[in-house]
Length: 212
Picture 1 (cartoon, rainbow, N blue to C red):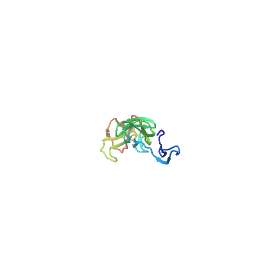
Picture 2 (cartoon, one colour):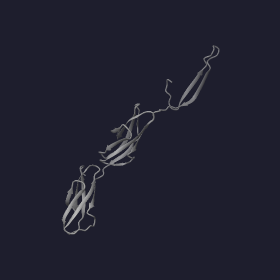
Picture 3 (cartoon, rainbow, N blue to C red):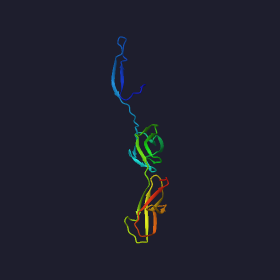
Picture 4 (spheres, rainbow, N blue to C red):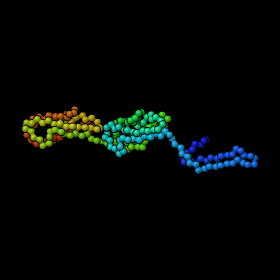
């Protein structure tokens, strides 16, 4: 056909009798209302499977963006990943994953674009996520709460600390507002010695390389 047919189009057929004579015109038969459908046998599809929609992602963390890409009759050559339209990176083979290192807080629209060896491409539906700031955390694990020691005491202080936005640089131990000591590496430990008789309130504070 000179003119391509479209989905749900109408095709008209006409038959002519070549055995006409001068006295008889061509015998014509017209057929209308014939519905036709056109389809692409190479259906390319892509969707983001992770992270989940509306996920909250800690600033500074590495999150895996995963996509499911399928096609019949052709070969997927590349899946490109985007955040708010900015190209993050790509994967050329299944599983189609990319590790996104979050560097700024805010709302992000994640999409994936799959391409094949026929030059076709398709864009996934967007998955919207939020990158949030999570302050570093510290937990005083020793000494035990309401514990007793014989004065002059030696008390071992310990803590665990994490930072999703960066790296923990130190943990400082306090008695009230007084600094007892600092530990720069994990495990975060400090030995408080020659502790006189009394009741004390102990705490720990964490700092990271992002200034928090």
